[in-house]
Image (cartoon, rainbow, N blue to C red; front, side, top):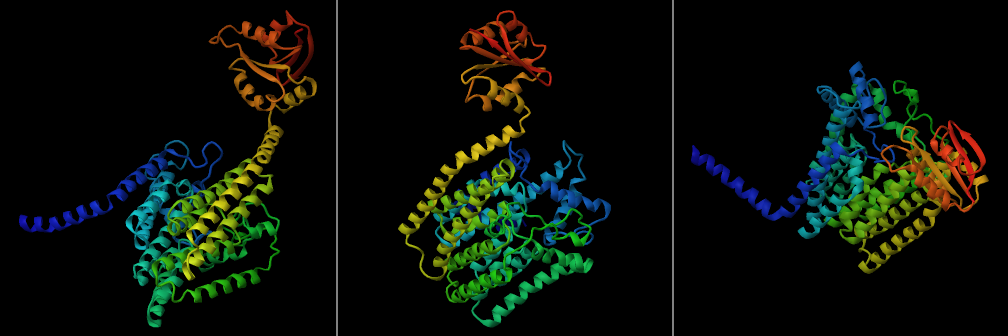
Length: 564
């Protein structure tokens, strides 16, 4: 018996050793990738010090309705296909098993983040496997390293479920490239019930099948998967289930060229606030003025033409991957709306089809444009619509440029490397030049916006009106009065015009009198002091210098002193 067990174990050991020898560099990356993202799930809050960039709270809110017996697409409408909302309900129920820590949702956020980590790990493995199908192993490893070091997929993993949906697309593509088209159709059908985009692999798999019979079987398998999995959800509430598919037809444009043409500079809304009222699904949209029937027909005709041209091309694995990337770009250009988390659908094809410096540069450019959209525009500068317009146009230009690259890879010959490098360099220099021009304007707008809402604005305006350029301004007081916070708040607005100093009277600092005297002696003619009205700083100056002016602001006193 022991010999039989040993005989069964030995082949497995040899297989593991062979895999380790072949893929040990990737396994090292995989371990670091999982460890890094696992720690990020526990310790990193997306949005950093700027804002909260995550839909986890929203997912938990809807999932928590289950505690009252209300479920997605059964009792309330959803803008998502059914699999993820029900998965969120399961994770919510699991999170209730554990005593909470801190703010509500700790365990939900943790378990959902770890689940998305599994999906993100699968994405890295699938990218490595797909690249291994298209290129030699060193290039496949390079693709994995590039993806592993990109920031955007990590941010999206911590805030949205798009990475989970991406897993289905990548798995379907990998199976298709490995000639397992029916399995790819099943995966694409399942992915279609998470988010619609994984289905775009099926047209590629269709042409890779050698006969019309096998093509028909592929379509039937895909359709049967969708019907079998969706049927229970549809039977529970046909009307609400249908809304999860038709709601996007009601939605208006956002964050795209189409939105700019319609004069809309906001983010997308799925509908009204009452999820239990089907009439509010797709409500609160701005008026659509574009001929969407013609736009849809135009993109549909373009895709059909390209798809028919790809009939004999996509049997080659690289061309098949390139055509899938082309499809992704065309769909993104066609869609009414774009949200920053959609970037995770675009990046895999950038680094798969341009697996080197050019791909990394394009990925970084797209990521930078994403950050300009959110949080820079939507959080810091929401009134600077030109900033959103610049980001949308930059992203659109990059997508068109990449679509041309992908299209030539899929249907003709790739752009010669030297021209591809020049195009990439031109795009980079153009966006850097735009950024160089836009940065000062953006900062000035930020400066004005912060001044407009600053609690210290009356003080700043008074000093600007009455104090001479070059005067000394001393911010005084102690810690209980918040003197350091006041200094930090006013310094950016005063530093260009005045010499600004801080003199705090707290007991742990060295004596404040010599420091205040040094400031008074340095003042050319006038010294301005801003401190609590009862601060000893005012009395010290009053014993030595004539007072020229006084203004009170909510218990703080601004005084001017003649130091000549």
